[in-house]
Length: 107
Image 1 (cartoon, helix red, strand yellow):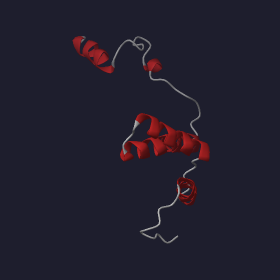
Image 2: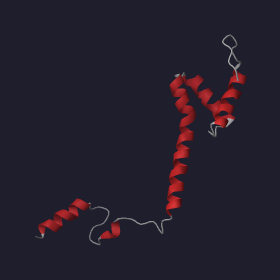
Image 3: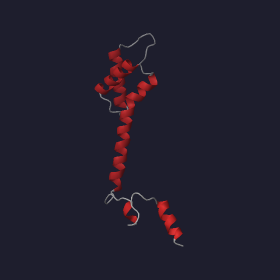
Image 4: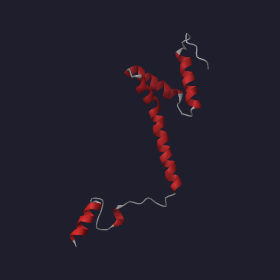
């Protein structure tokens, strides 16, 4: 893909090239998502940087969530456990420090 300084691509060609670049980079951006981001940028007069952030933020968030879920799955936790049952006297309203204070006051 050679770029010629005097040749300005039409918007449709540029859109298709950008979608192809995202595909090569393995960023799952659908044409509909791209068009919605462009429409929002035009409607809200977004800066170039804000447009880029809008374009890729959702994809990045989804990738982070999948990564977290994959790590949880790979950890193979036996069951979900909460910290409240550590001591029967201290429930979710009490903090660790409150428990220490009462333990020290008994001395």
